Length: 273
Image 1 (tube, rainbow, N blue to C red):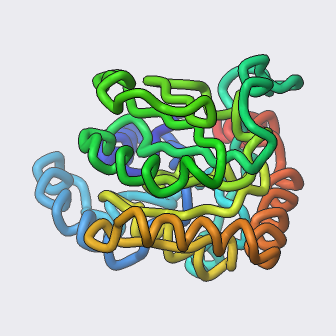
Image 2 (spheres, helix red, strand yellow):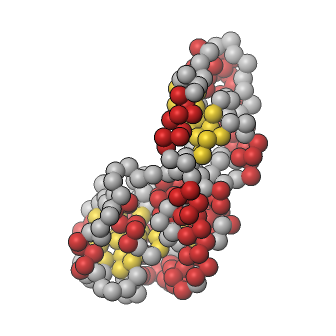
Image 3 (tube, rainbow, N blue to C red):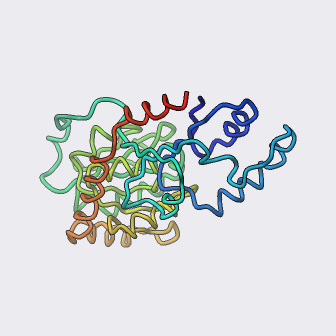
């Protein structure tokens, strides 16, 4: 058996040619069917070159789909799949049981986590805008990526912590909201702790993820051209002052907590062998 993530389209073709089962693993809401149909058309020549009948969805969803997305964020298309195994998204590494010591140096006020993940973080001006917008009102924990220098953002008050990288599961339990790009891992990680989100999509599946967060009532969205110190401040104030956002995020947190652990997915995969 082969386990592959949903955007990797060689595994279905290779496994079909060898006559072995394979498992598709998602990383967020189900990919929209029109996009998968386009992918199927794009890879069809490669299937034919190997004497295989092309599959309309590039070979996906034939055996088992492992779904880490909670119901509140999932697309309706999940009901059309024959074999789905929900799996709770979990942190890589032990959960933080105690608040980091350096949190004690922060003022007594809400803390907001700010990140653009590990790929979409090239523009330091984004971080400058968010820090300018929020540092007088909340504490900020900002991760800028391994290729950026935190000192390039200049001196900051004690309420602003800037690092290249912090494992998000170490800080999310102690935050009240998050500003992010909407990558699935960051999105699910923050919602697993019940944090309302301000999503500023940068690419890939992030616009679709932002739409699902909005539809679930767990956050708000800004497009890149609309980002300014004023708009970011306004959006975060809305998230922190309106309890409906926290209530929706906590509902998703509870859904994630009730999803089956990875061990159940492993057992389901073993059944295919």
